[in-house]
Length: 147
Image (cartoon, rainbow, N blue to C red; front, side, top):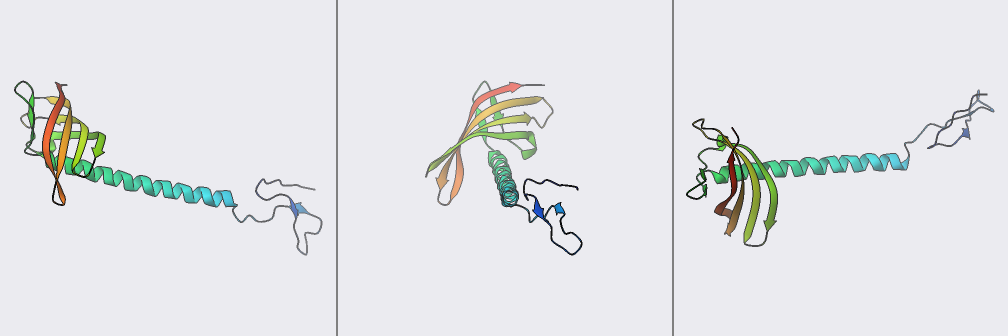
Protein backbone atom coordinates (compact mmCIF):
# COMPACT_ATOMS: atom_id res chain seq x y z
CA UNK A 1 0.00 0.00 0.00
CA UNK A 2 1.37 3.42 -1.01
CA UNK A 3 0.65 6.37 1.29
CA UNK A 4 1.09 9.99 0.21
CA UNK A 5 1.29 12.66 2.90
CA UNK A 6 0.37 16.30 2.39
CA UNK A 7 0.29 19.04 5.03
CA UNK A 8 -2.44 21.08 3.34
CA UNK A 9 -4.73 18.14 2.61
CA UNK A 10 -4.50 15.45 5.27
CA UNK A 11 -4.80 11.83 4.25
CA UNK A 12 -8.34 10.87 3.30
CA UNK A 13 -9.92 7.95 1.61
CA UNK A 14 -10.25 8.48 -2.14
CA UNK A 15 -13.61 7.33 -3.37
CA UNK A 16 -14.24 5.88 -6.73
CA UNK A 17 -15.20 2.63 -8.44
CA UNK A 18 -11.65 1.26 -8.80
CA UNK A 19 -10.10 2.84 -5.70
CA UNK A 20 -11.80 1.18 -2.75
CA UNK A 21 -9.50 0.95 0.22
CA UNK A 22 -6.72 3.12 -1.27
CA UNK A 23 -5.49 5.99 0.88
CA UNK A 24 -4.27 8.95 -1.16
CA UNK A 25 -4.49 12.65 -1.64
CA UNK A 26 -7.68 14.54 -2.36
CA UNK A 27 -7.13 17.11 -5.14
CA UNK A 28 -6.02 20.40 -3.63
CA UNK A 29 -8.14 23.54 -3.74
CA UNK A 30 -5.12 25.73 -2.91
CA UNK A 31 -5.31 26.41 0.78
CA UNK A 32 -6.33 29.70 2.31
CA UNK A 33 -2.82 30.70 3.32
CA UNK A 34 -1.50 30.25 -0.22
CA UNK A 35 -4.24 32.41 -1.72
CA UNK A 36 -3.77 35.15 0.88
CA UNK A 37 0.01 35.05 0.47
CA UNK A 38 -0.24 35.45 -3.31
CA UNK A 39 -2.72 38.31 -2.92
CA UNK A 40 -0.42 40.02 -0.40
CA UNK A 41 2.59 39.66 -2.72
CA UNK A 42 0.69 41.14 -5.66
CA UNK A 43 -0.47 44.08 -3.51
CA UNK A 44 3.06 44.77 -2.28
CA UNK A 45 4.44 44.58 -5.82
CA UNK A 46 1.79 46.98 -7.12
CA UNK A 47 2.40 49.44 -4.27
CA UNK A 48 6.17 49.26 -4.85
CA UNK A 49 5.76 49.93 -8.56
CA UNK A 50 3.50 52.90 -7.84
CA UNK A 51 5.91 54.33 -5.25
CA UNK A 52 8.83 53.92 -7.66
CA UNK A 53 6.99 55.70 -10.47
CA UNK A 54 5.99 58.56 -8.14
CA UNK A 55 9.60 58.85 -6.90
CA UNK A 56 10.91 58.87 -10.49
CA UNK A 57 8.43 61.57 -11.49
CA UNK A 58 9.43 63.65 -8.46
CA UNK A 59 13.14 63.32 -9.35
CA UNK A 60 12.45 64.36 -12.96
CA UNK A 61 10.45 67.38 -11.73
CA UNK A 62 13.29 68.39 -9.40
CA UNK A 63 15.81 68.15 -12.25
CA UNK A 64 13.76 70.38 -14.53
CA UNK A 65 13.04 72.87 -11.71
CA UNK A 66 16.76 73.23 -10.97
CA UNK A 67 17.57 74.48 -14.49
CA UNK A 68 18.49 78.17 -14.27
CA UNK A 69 19.08 77.99 -10.51
CA UNK A 70 22.42 78.61 -8.83
CA UNK A 71 23.60 76.99 -5.62
CA UNK A 72 26.54 78.13 -3.58
CA UNK A 73 28.38 81.38 -3.14
CA UNK A 74 31.66 83.03 -4.12
CA UNK A 75 33.98 80.12 -3.37
CA UNK A 76 31.93 77.16 -4.53
CA UNK A 77 29.05 77.64 -6.90
CA UNK A 78 27.13 75.56 -9.42
CA UNK A 79 24.75 76.99 -12.02
CA UNK A 80 22.35 74.43 -13.46
CA UNK A 81 22.25 75.02 -17.21
CA UNK A 82 20.83 71.77 -18.61
CA UNK A 83 19.17 68.60 -17.35
CA UNK A 84 21.95 66.45 -18.82
CA UNK A 85 24.44 68.05 -16.38
CA UNK A 86 22.63 66.21 -13.57
CA UNK A 87 23.88 62.65 -13.95
CA UNK A 88 22.25 61.41 -10.74
CA UNK A 89 19.80 62.93 -8.26
CA UNK A 90 18.74 61.09 -5.10
CA UNK A 91 16.20 62.43 -2.61
CA UNK A 92 17.66 61.78 0.83
CA UNK A 93 14.99 63.54 2.88
CA UNK A 94 11.73 65.39 2.28
CA UNK A 95 9.68 67.48 4.70
CA UNK A 96 6.49 69.28 3.85
CA UNK A 97 3.86 71.47 5.45
CA UNK A 98 1.03 73.53 3.96
CA UNK A 99 3.24 76.33 2.56
CA UNK A 100 6.77 74.88 2.38
CA UNK A 101 8.44 71.77 0.99
CA UNK A 102 12.12 71.05 1.68
CA UNK A 103 14.26 68.41 -0.04
CA UNK A 104 17.75 67.30 0.91
CA UNK A 105 19.26 65.82 -2.25
CA UNK A 106 22.54 64.29 -3.29
CA UNK A 107 23.81 64.98 -6.78
CA UNK A 108 26.34 63.74 -9.28
CA UNK A 109 27.08 66.53 -11.71
CA UNK A 110 29.13 66.93 -14.87
CA UNK A 111 29.96 70.27 -16.41
CA UNK A 112 28.95 70.70 -20.03
CA UNK A 113 32.42 71.88 -21.03
CA UNK A 114 34.09 68.69 -19.77
CA UNK A 115 35.79 70.32 -16.81
CA UNK A 116 35.18 67.33 -14.56
CA UNK A 117 32.65 65.46 -12.49
CA UNK A 118 31.38 66.60 -9.13
CA UNK A 119 29.42 65.18 -6.24
CA UNK A 120 27.32 67.41 -4.08
CA UNK A 121 24.54 67.76 -1.59
CA UNK A 122 21.91 70.50 -1.58
CA UNK A 123 18.86 71.75 0.27
CA UNK A 124 16.04 72.72 -2.11
CA UNK A 125 13.21 74.77 -0.63
CA UNK A 126 9.90 75.19 -2.40
CA UNK A 127 7.05 77.55 -1.46
CA UNK A 128 3.45 77.29 -2.53
CA UNK A 129 2.45 79.76 -5.23
CA UNK A 130 -1.30 79.33 -5.66
CA UNK A 131 -1.79 75.70 -6.62
CA UNK A 132 1.82 75.15 -7.73
CA UNK A 133 5.16 74.80 -5.96
CA UNK A 134 8.05 77.13 -6.92
CA UNK A 135 11.68 76.97 -5.87
CA UNK A 136 12.46 79.62 -3.28
CA UNK A 137 16.15 78.77 -2.84
CA UNK A 138 18.77 76.13 -3.50
CA UNK A 139 21.33 75.89 -0.71
CA UNK A 140 24.66 74.21 -1.28
CA UNK A 141 25.58 71.83 1.54
CA UNK A 142 28.68 70.33 -0.11
CA UNK A 143 30.40 70.20 -3.48
CA UNK A 144 33.54 68.23 -4.35
CA UNK A 145 35.33 67.33 -7.56
CA UNK A 146 35.59 63.57 -8.06
CA UNK A 147 37.38 63.43 -11.45
